[in-house]
Length: 115
Length: 111
Image (tube, rainbow over all chains, first blue to last red):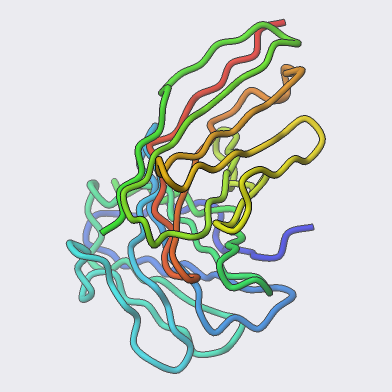
């Protein structure tokens, strides 16, 4: 069964509003979780690495003030897209490592549409 | 940083035939190479992976081979079935750090 959940599965919002996406590790305490973005017909691009109890590590070109990541517990990481614009419309997917630290299991993704 | 190239971008095979997808990586220190299958609108599912201390790994109809010298690895699917149709991604990482993905291959299995 699924080991990572995400909520919501889809969201439509108006331009300028903020949207929060939750990622939960269901069976494993995850000190590290990852956030990816996937545009239509493209590959997964890592946005940031979420570290429990400390600041997230953002990939080059990803605005940390726009994509706020909070990893307050060992089972929950959140991504908040602030002041969303139509170009932020994408499929956002989180993942966590398994008992083998290099293995990653993905959540079901959140489809964000900004009008 | 790591760069992963994947070929072909699309692959059409007849049901029952084999399919091969190839990836090359740039960082010789990479030591973990997973393959993911993603159906439309769904999450990527890990289907097989290989670590750098192994040259080949097989799981039923799926196999992965790794050539560390040439820095390339391949996914082999035998006896393809229509349900194998999906997008397949290869990836590479080093020491449990971030995964770098290939661009993906759309596999179509025609019945």
